[in-house]
Length: 100
Image (tube, rainbow, N blue to C red; front, top):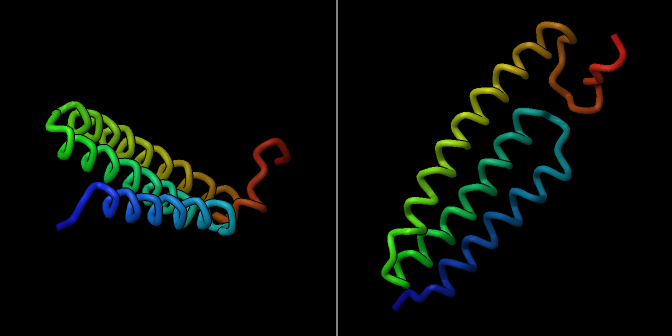
């Protein structure tokens, strides 16, 4: 029988992998993918609690989180395209908009 603890362990692993990726990677696209991984870990927790508590609140909240994540991905990709056109790199260390 799979309990809520199993889902929370998988959720924590996803969140930890995303956090590790954000803190160690320098490529902006990979950092955005790791942020999405962190959001999916949180969404898994919301769904698990929603299912085991018998409430729809968690699932509704996940819908809004996924909407914001899609908008964040679209804006982030547009920013990365702009940075690449201007600087010809998407390495986070080399992107400094205060120095042109």
